[in-house]
Image 1 (spheres, rainbow, N blue to C red):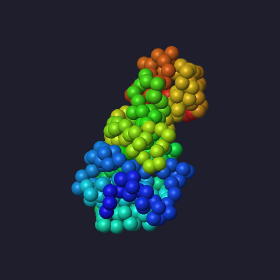
Image 2 (cartoon, rainbow, N blue to C red):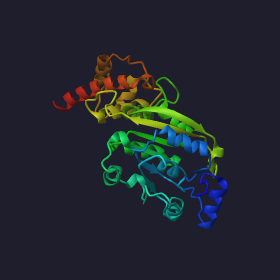
Image 3 (cartoon, rainbow, N blue to C red):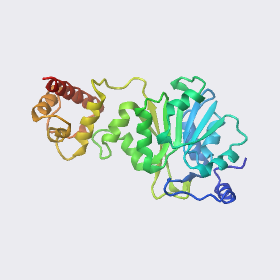
Image 4 (tube, rainbow, N blue to C red):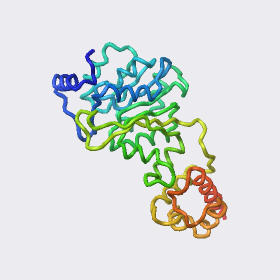
Length: 295
Protein backbone atom coordinates (compact mmCIF):
# COMPACT_ATOMS: atom_id res chain seq x y z
CA UNK A 1 0.00 0.00 0.00
CA UNK A 2 1.32 3.43 -0.97
CA UNK A 3 1.82 6.07 1.68
CA UNK A 4 -1.75 7.12 2.41
CA UNK A 5 -0.63 10.35 4.00
CA UNK A 6 1.11 11.53 0.80
CA UNK A 7 -0.87 14.30 -0.96
CA UNK A 8 -0.29 12.60 -4.32
CA UNK A 9 -1.78 9.35 -2.99
CA UNK A 10 -4.79 11.14 -1.53
CA UNK A 11 -5.37 12.87 -4.89
CA UNK A 12 -5.04 9.60 -6.83
CA UNK A 13 -7.52 7.79 -4.57
CA UNK A 14 -9.86 10.78 -4.61
CA UNK A 15 -9.87 10.92 -8.42
CA UNK A 16 -10.17 7.17 -8.95
CA UNK A 17 -13.28 7.02 -6.77
CA UNK A 18 -14.62 10.40 -7.95
CA UNK A 19 -14.66 11.42 -4.30
CA UNK A 20 -15.46 15.00 -3.33
CA UNK A 21 -14.56 16.53 0.03
CA UNK A 22 -17.68 17.42 2.00
CA UNK A 23 -17.71 20.84 3.67
CA UNK A 24 -20.88 19.91 5.54
CA UNK A 25 -19.05 16.97 7.15
CA UNK A 26 -15.96 19.05 7.87
CA UNK A 27 -13.64 16.74 5.92
CA UNK A 28 -9.95 17.65 6.13
CA UNK A 29 -7.64 14.65 5.68
CA UNK A 30 -4.19 14.41 7.22
CA UNK A 31 -1.24 14.42 4.81
CA UNK A 32 1.56 14.61 7.38
CA UNK A 33 3.10 11.39 8.70
CA UNK A 34 4.57 13.09 11.77
CA UNK A 35 1.12 14.20 12.93
CA UNK A 36 -0.33 10.75 12.27
CA UNK A 37 2.45 9.29 14.43
CA UNK A 38 1.82 11.91 17.12
CA UNK A 39 -1.80 10.82 17.38
CA UNK A 40 -1.05 7.08 17.50
CA UNK A 41 1.95 7.44 19.80
CA UNK A 42 0.19 10.08 21.92
CA UNK A 43 -2.66 7.63 22.49
CA UNK A 44 -0.13 5.04 23.72
CA UNK A 45 -1.59 2.29 21.53
CA UNK A 46 -0.11 -1.14 22.18
CA UNK A 47 -0.51 -4.75 20.96
CA UNK A 48 -3.26 -5.60 23.48
CA UNK A 49 -5.40 -2.52 22.78
CA UNK A 50 -8.84 -2.28 21.22
CA UNK A 51 -9.13 1.02 19.36
CA UNK A 52 -12.22 2.91 18.21
CA UNK A 53 -11.50 5.51 15.57
CA UNK A 54 -14.00 8.27 14.84
CA UNK A 55 -13.97 9.56 11.28
CA UNK A 56 -11.23 7.49 9.58
CA UNK A 57 -11.48 9.36 6.27
CA UNK A 58 -9.31 7.43 3.82
CA UNK A 59 -7.72 5.35 6.57
CA UNK A 60 -4.47 7.22 7.19
CA UNK A 61 -4.59 7.04 10.99
CA UNK A 62 -6.45 3.74 10.86
CA UNK A 63 -3.54 1.95 9.18
CA UNK A 64 -0.95 3.18 11.65
CA UNK A 65 -3.17 2.34 14.62
CA UNK A 66 -3.90 -1.14 13.24
CA UNK A 67 -0.18 -1.86 12.92
CA UNK A 68 0.15 -1.39 16.69
CA UNK A 69 -3.23 -2.43 18.12
CA UNK A 70 -4.93 -5.79 18.46
CA UNK A 71 -8.06 -4.48 16.72
CA UNK A 72 -9.41 -1.22 15.32
CA UNK A 73 -13.06 -0.39 14.71
CA UNK A 74 -13.44 2.70 12.52
CA UNK A 75 -16.76 4.54 12.54
CA UNK A 76 -17.34 6.59 9.38
CA UNK A 77 -20.50 8.57 8.62
CA UNK A 78 -19.79 9.19 4.91
CA UNK A 79 -20.93 6.16 2.88
CA UNK A 80 -18.91 7.32 -0.14
CA UNK A 81 -15.73 6.67 1.88
CA UNK A 82 -16.59 3.03 2.63
CA UNK A 83 -15.36 1.60 -0.73
CA UNK A 84 -12.21 3.69 -0.36
CA UNK A 85 -11.58 2.30 3.13
CA UNK A 86 -12.23 -1.22 1.89
CA UNK A 87 -9.48 -0.63 -0.67
CA UNK A 88 -6.91 1.15 1.51
CA UNK A 89 -7.31 -1.26 4.45
CA UNK A 90 -7.79 -4.46 2.44
CA UNK A 91 -4.50 -6.02 3.58
CA UNK A 92 -5.31 -5.59 7.29
CA UNK A 93 -7.28 -8.33 9.03
CA UNK A 94 -7.70 -6.51 12.35
CA UNK A 95 -9.81 -3.58 11.11
CA UNK A 96 -13.61 -3.32 11.11
CA UNK A 97 -15.25 -0.38 9.34
CA UNK A 98 -18.74 0.71 10.38
CA UNK A 99 -20.81 3.16 8.32
CA UNK A 100 -22.61 5.05 11.09
CA UNK A 101 -22.99 8.48 12.66
CA UNK A 102 -20.99 8.38 15.89
CA UNK A 103 -23.53 10.67 17.57
CA UNK A 104 -26.22 8.06 16.92
CA UNK A 105 -24.01 5.07 17.71
CA UNK A 106 -23.91 3.13 20.96
CA UNK A 107 -20.15 3.05 21.58
CA UNK A 108 -20.65 0.74 24.56
CA UNK A 109 -22.29 -1.73 22.20
CA UNK A 110 -19.33 -1.57 19.81
CA UNK A 111 -16.95 -2.37 22.65
CA UNK A 112 -19.12 -5.23 23.84
CA UNK A 113 -19.44 -6.68 20.34
CA UNK A 114 -15.91 -6.32 18.98
CA UNK A 115 -13.44 -5.92 21.86
CA UNK A 116 -13.31 -9.52 23.00
CA UNK A 117 -13.95 -8.53 26.59
CA UNK A 118 -11.20 -5.93 26.89
CA UNK A 119 -11.08 -3.92 30.10
CA UNK A 120 -11.20 -0.12 30.03
CA UNK A 121 -7.40 0.05 30.31
CA UNK A 122 -7.14 -1.58 26.88
CA UNK A 123 -9.82 0.49 25.13
CA UNK A 124 -8.66 3.68 23.43
CA UNK A 125 -10.57 6.16 21.29
CA UNK A 126 -8.85 8.21 18.60
CA UNK A 127 -9.89 10.43 15.72
CA UNK A 128 -9.61 13.51 13.57
CA UNK A 129 -12.94 15.10 14.46
CA UNK A 130 -15.04 17.51 12.39
CA UNK A 131 -14.66 20.80 14.24
CA UNK A 132 -18.35 21.63 14.34
CA UNK A 133 -19.29 18.53 16.37
CA UNK A 134 -16.17 18.03 18.48
CA UNK A 135 -17.80 19.00 21.77
CA UNK A 136 -20.99 16.92 21.29
CA UNK A 137 -18.91 13.84 20.44
CA UNK A 138 -16.62 14.22 23.45
CA UNK A 139 -19.50 14.83 25.86
CA UNK A 140 -21.51 11.92 24.46
CA UNK A 141 -18.62 9.52 25.09
CA UNK A 142 -18.07 10.85 28.60
CA UNK A 143 -21.72 11.09 29.61
CA UNK A 144 -22.50 7.63 28.20
CA UNK A 145 -19.88 6.18 30.55
CA UNK A 146 -17.92 4.51 27.74
CA UNK A 147 -15.37 2.19 29.42
CA UNK A 148 -12.30 3.59 27.68
CA UNK A 149 -8.89 4.51 29.00
CA UNK A 150 -8.47 7.64 26.90
CA UNK A 151 -9.66 9.78 24.00
CA UNK A 152 -6.91 11.16 21.75
CA UNK A 153 -8.29 13.43 19.08
CA UNK A 154 -7.53 16.20 16.66
CA UNK A 155 -9.69 19.27 17.09
CA UNK A 156 -9.76 23.00 16.50
CA UNK A 157 -6.92 24.64 18.44
CA UNK A 158 -9.22 27.07 20.25
CA UNK A 159 -11.48 24.25 21.48
CA UNK A 160 -8.50 22.26 22.75
CA UNK A 161 -7.26 25.32 24.64
CA UNK A 162 -10.68 25.79 26.22
CA UNK A 163 -10.83 22.16 27.32
CA UNK A 164 -7.30 22.26 28.74
CA UNK A 165 -7.65 25.71 30.35
CA UNK A 166 -6.90 26.42 34.00
CA UNK A 167 -9.01 28.58 36.35
CA UNK A 168 -8.44 32.30 36.02
CA UNK A 169 -7.48 32.20 32.33
CA UNK A 170 -9.51 33.68 29.47
CA UNK A 171 -10.16 30.24 27.93
CA UNK A 172 -11.49 28.69 31.14
CA UNK A 173 -15.23 28.06 31.01
CA UNK A 174 -18.03 25.54 31.38
CA UNK A 175 -16.46 23.23 28.78
CA UNK A 176 -13.18 23.18 30.74
CA UNK A 177 -14.99 22.22 33.96
CA UNK A 178 -17.26 19.66 32.27
CA UNK A 179 -14.44 17.75 30.58
CA UNK A 180 -12.04 18.06 33.51
CA UNK A 181 -14.68 16.58 35.80
CA UNK A 182 -14.33 13.35 33.82
CA UNK A 183 -10.73 13.53 32.58
CA UNK A 184 -7.16 14.63 32.99
CA UNK A 185 -6.21 16.63 29.88
CA UNK A 186 -2.94 16.85 27.97
CA UNK A 187 -2.07 18.70 24.76
CA UNK A 188 0.02 16.39 22.57
CA UNK A 189 0.92 18.74 19.72
CA UNK A 190 -0.28 21.68 17.67
CA UNK A 191 -0.91 21.07 13.98
CA UNK A 192 -0.39 23.54 11.11
CA UNK A 193 -3.02 24.01 8.39
CA UNK A 194 -0.55 22.62 5.84
CA UNK A 195 -0.90 19.15 7.41
CA UNK A 196 -4.35 18.75 5.84
CA UNK A 197 -6.01 18.35 2.47
CA UNK A 198 -7.93 20.55 1.92
CA UNK A 199 -6.44 23.06 4.32
CA UNK A 200 -8.81 24.23 7.09
CA UNK A 201 -9.15 27.91 7.93
CA UNK A 202 -8.11 27.38 11.56
CA UNK A 203 -5.24 25.77 13.43
CA UNK A 204 -5.58 22.33 15.01
CA UNK A 205 -4.38 20.56 18.14
CA UNK A 206 -4.09 16.93 19.19
CA UNK A 207 -5.47 16.56 22.72
CA UNK A 208 -5.53 13.48 24.93
CA UNK A 209 -8.22 13.04 27.54
CA UNK A 210 -7.36 10.41 30.15
CA UNK A 211 -10.69 9.26 31.54
CA UNK A 212 -10.56 8.93 35.31
CA UNK A 213 -12.05 5.76 36.77
CA UNK A 214 -12.55 7.72 39.97
CA UNK A 215 -13.60 11.34 39.65
CA UNK A 216 -11.49 14.05 41.23
CA UNK A 217 -14.46 15.36 43.20
CA UNK A 218 -17.39 13.74 44.98
CA UNK A 219 -20.79 15.12 44.02
CA UNK A 220 -24.09 14.74 45.83
CA UNK A 221 -25.91 15.32 42.55
CA UNK A 222 -24.27 15.60 39.13
CA UNK A 223 -27.17 17.53 37.59
CA UNK A 224 -26.92 20.20 40.29
CA UNK A 225 -23.18 20.47 39.69
CA UNK A 226 -23.60 21.09 35.97
CA UNK A 227 -26.48 23.51 36.60
CA UNK A 228 -24.23 25.59 38.85
CA UNK A 229 -21.40 25.51 36.31
CA UNK A 230 -23.72 26.50 33.46
CA UNK A 231 -25.31 29.30 35.48
CA UNK A 232 -21.96 30.58 36.71
CA UNK A 233 -20.48 30.88 33.24
CA UNK A 234 -23.77 31.90 31.64
CA UNK A 235 -23.10 35.46 32.72
CA UNK A 236 -19.33 35.58 33.12
CA UNK A 237 -19.11 39.24 34.05
CA UNK A 238 -21.47 38.85 36.98
CA UNK A 239 -20.36 37.79 40.43
CA UNK A 240 -21.42 34.36 41.67
CA UNK A 241 -24.01 35.91 43.97
CA UNK A 242 -25.81 37.11 40.83
CA UNK A 243 -24.99 34.50 38.19
CA UNK A 244 -26.09 31.58 40.40
CA UNK A 245 -29.61 32.98 40.31
CA UNK A 246 -29.77 31.18 36.96
CA UNK A 247 -30.05 27.83 38.79
CA UNK A 248 -33.62 26.54 38.66
CA UNK A 249 -35.57 27.10 41.89
CA UNK A 250 -32.77 28.90 43.72
CA UNK A 251 -33.24 31.95 45.93
CA UNK A 252 -30.96 34.77 47.01
CA UNK A 253 -30.91 33.26 50.50
CA UNK A 254 -29.80 29.84 49.21
CA UNK A 255 -27.09 31.44 47.08
CA UNK A 256 -25.78 33.43 50.05
CA UNK A 257 -25.85 30.45 52.42
CA UNK A 258 -24.27 28.07 49.89
CA UNK A 259 -21.39 30.40 49.07
CA UNK A 260 -20.76 31.00 52.76
CA UNK A 261 -20.87 27.26 53.60
CA UNK A 262 -18.47 26.49 50.73
CA UNK A 263 -16.09 29.22 51.90
CA UNK A 264 -16.35 31.12 48.61
CA UNK A 265 -16.49 34.91 48.46
CA UNK A 266 -19.76 36.09 46.92
CA UNK A 267 -17.86 38.69 44.91
CA UNK A 268 -15.87 36.13 42.94
CA UNK A 269 -16.70 35.13 39.37
CA UNK A 270 -17.13 31.61 38.02
CA UNK A 271 -13.89 31.75 36.02
CA UNK A 272 -11.88 31.90 39.26
CA UNK A 273 -13.30 28.68 40.75
CA UNK A 274 -11.47 25.40 40.31
CA UNK A 275 -13.17 22.02 40.02
CA UNK A 276 -13.05 21.39 43.77
CA UNK A 277 -14.65 24.73 44.60
CA UNK A 278 -17.40 24.18 42.05
CA UNK A 279 -18.10 20.75 43.55
CA UNK A 280 -18.24 22.13 47.09
CA UNK A 281 -20.54 24.94 46.02
CA UNK A 282 -22.83 22.64 44.02
CA UNK A 283 -23.13 20.23 46.93
CA UNK A 284 -24.16 23.06 49.25
CA UNK A 285 -26.71 24.32 46.72
CA UNK A 286 -28.12 20.82 46.29
CA UNK A 287 -28.53 20.29 50.03
CA UNK A 288 -30.44 23.56 50.44
CA UNK A 289 -32.60 23.12 47.34
CA UNK A 290 -33.48 19.59 48.40
CA UNK A 291 -34.47 20.86 51.83
CA UNK A 292 -36.53 23.64 50.28
CA UNK A 293 -38.35 21.27 47.93
CA UNK A 294 -39.04 18.84 50.76
CA UNK A 295 -40.94 21.42 52.80
